[in-house]
Length: 619
Ligand code: AHR
Image (cartoon, rainbow, N blue to C red; front, side, top):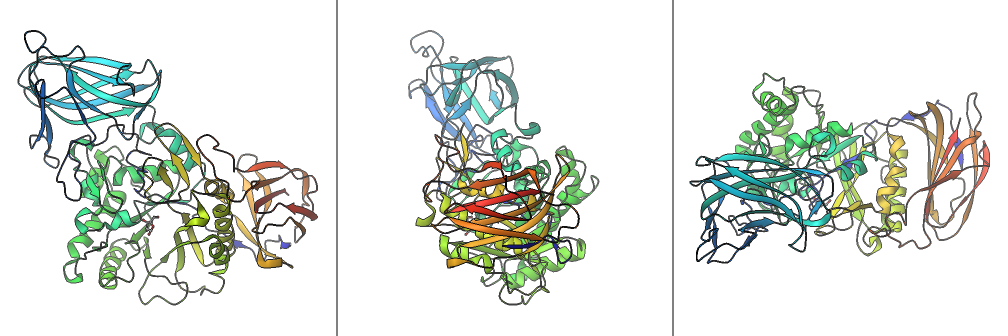
């Protein structure tokens, strides 16, 4: 491998080159990154054929003790349904309530993770014509152990009343439930029941362990909220940003009909922008362009949708006095968010109205916000686009071999047109298992190809990012979690090898011999912000089953030679290329770093079979 490490003929890689694509899929947001523990908090959840239901709430007490039903009795206009509980039993007399009372409990998203010593904020809205006596408790998975409890006594709740209580857990159970019970006869209406841990990232509602996993990737951007989630199977179920902003209690929630689950939309448009800011990543807002999988808005009547998206940009960027900027300010963020990228739809290029709708959105956005970069869904890698765009979206899901060979996909792409946004790439199918080493290596080869073509590719992200192990709608994924555990698949760890590429300098590098085309390599210069030292990083994937001794020769270093001390080699490999990580073995396939004792301008490096290697050479 010859590397020309001089600055001449080197290219600067975009600061946004590697990022993440966050989709509300696999319960990645609801029941995932969004730390809300209660599922269907407003009793509003509907399905394809169900207008609303109380699933997964359970009723404690049989019909002789309690009648529970839903009613359009909420104090909130946009989510009208509330729970009505008619308590028939009492503290004494013939029909006395059981000792623990009667009521309802919510098991959350496959169990709530309640941890000893941690504090949880429970909020609910209640109404009753009688004085209120109610217990709010976290109960263990056996239904018996009380982990935390508080008694709520209110003399007058004849008007809807907000109740807020902090519960400190005295024990730990990863599969707990939130229970609301009473022993007093009468009718009680309940609505908008929320339970959140106090320790979310910066108090912004993001589950810390999941947030930290993605922050560790140092993403240059975050694309949200999908994916197909943006489109919907039907327009009526698409993501509508205005229904996801403002006070959480007032959001109607919606049924995401592509991935077939209800979201309360606690993680809404504002929270996505906040997430981007907290990650130090640029937000990429993918909006619905009037097209779903099964129906479309005609271009002749698309203008209200265009105005809706202009409003969304004003919400993000407008000053606090603007109509929508003021809504953002009222939510606690008077400063604008740094929104610079929007994508007009997801995977909609071939659809009948795409072209017409696209042009309406494009023209209106460019005239109001000329600096915003607009992403088209049409692939411009093999032919010129027939419409204006700053970037074009490129998605690839394929087997391992073809993913590895797609490293050369952009080698001959025109450098004069819009650049590529490879917003979804993944090895799928049998090759990938549930996320194995083979998948990670093929994707690493592809990414090295993108890096080498970073004058034609501006951004790239793996998809999907997250999966709640209880709802694997799309397999494989980069990060797997449940209520309390989390691990990165090899593909997640592979992405760590590219974290320092954002804003780095790409050097020319050439493989002189490449038996079976099983090797691919790139070279970058980057500066470690922690020690202010400069490194030359050479990455090589060995996608073959043989050990390779790679002879490396580095030219063009102005003054500093490579220093042996301080240089390091990081490798991602395993004894079997089909190996995966699990909750019990979360780092079976993870990067291992060691010194590189023979570091120098000329050196031999041993590449293990099926391995990703990163040599950080201190200059
Ligand atoms: O990443 C999973 C899905 O794959 C996305 O929702 C969609 O864009 C693609 O088809």
